[in-house]
Length: 335
Image (cartoon, rainbow, N blue to C red; front, top):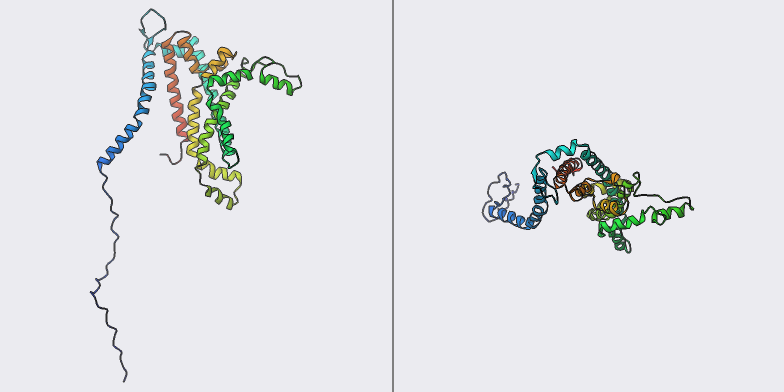
């Protein structure tokens, strides 16, 4: 007879519930309390209040007052009351040869200065930042030396470069060229010659300002993870390929900020031109900028209304150019 073994007894306990298709419940989300958003907005407003107040008090109000003055004939020291001119100041600025000629020349000088300074200074700042982004002995000293010209006031920098570019034989640049050329180089008026006057201002400005952009780019370089360079080396990427595919994408946002900042600062060029024109023999027509013309129109010719019109037109031009530049060079992740 064939024996049949009994089936094993089921374990004691409650029977399991029939299996059903499990559906993961939607993740619970906490409702955002409106009071918290209001507090965050209030805290942000309070933290930005000093900057906003300063911006309104020292930029917004003076610019609004300049817009109002541009519609009047206002002269310093005149016993006559200001008279309403309407758009006459703006019409003269573009149609009167005595006014439009110097203004357009000054605007062209500003554009020339910006076109040269922005790419050259940004490239030099990036090169210096890459060079100083190394773990070497006394690297802090080298960084301080390159940043030191930024600390100097522009008036002091202009005086120093006036000694360097002096037209006499005692000028430092002329003396160095005279020694290198074994006496064949004579005295040359670097500041007074129209062909080299603007170039002198450009070199002076780049030397004084490149350290500031270098520090910003250096901070951006230090935020790039080192693992990216290690992975690139494992893939046998060359130095140029690492720079192109790792460094530039890593500092793209910082680089855009530096370009925008340098562009704005390049349109504000005034101090070095004013100091060198007044005491250094700089060619005024070749280096006249819009800010220089506005200041001289206001305080040398006492024509406050015309100077206000110049500043308003120049402000609008700079805003338009800045918006175009921001549209062109904005980061890829920016909407």
